[in-house]
Image 1: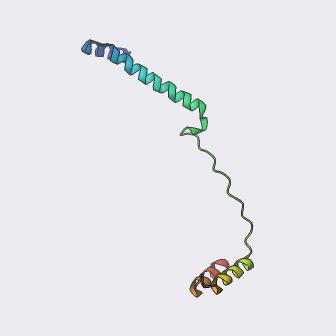
Image 2: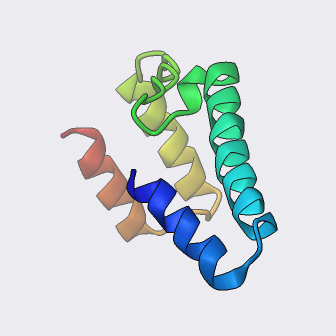
Image 3: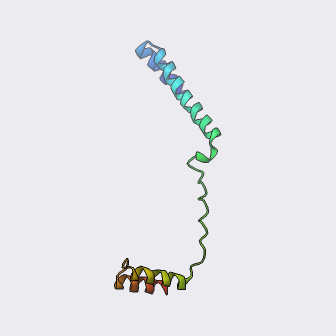
Length: 93
């Protein structure tokens, strides 16, 4: 009822009904568009959370192989002695 009285009041003040019709058409059109999109993409709503993709499975790390690779990188000059020691310590943890 309040909406109808607001509409009557606007028509009485402005003398025009086209602004009322445009407002209602825009309001209803927006609602219909929203409902159509929600129906087409149900998982896109804010209340539905998409499940994250599964984490890639990594093969188990062989500490001996990793230590060989680190030693080779140190021998070739890519790692300093301090970096090699730090990585070696983290490898044993």
